[in-house]
Image 1 (spheres, rainbow, N blue to C red):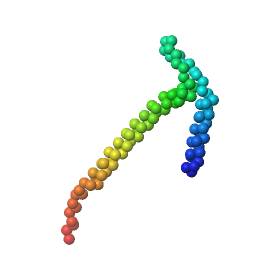
Image 2: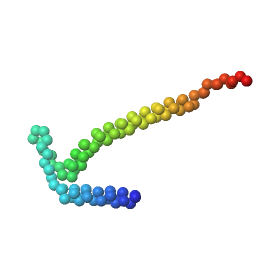
Image 3: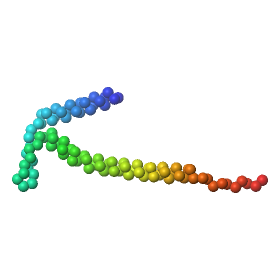
Image 4: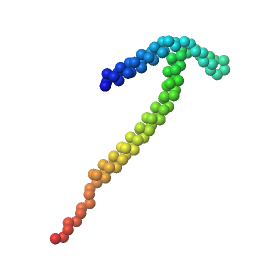
Length: 94
């Protein structure tokens, strides 16, 4: 199974490299005013991907962190409830 996963990622990587090599052209971006920037198409695509991915990644990590904090708090509560000394139960008179 690891071999198939590695083969899949190698094939995806090869496809991306081939696509980037075939589209290695300059694109002129018109920024504000009369400022222009020349950038290669694959670099532009990678930059746009990261701009879209990074905020979602931060939201995901924040949710995981918050859930982990809540789980740790709950586990601490359970631990203190278990370790609390149980009240002594009076023995029944015979």
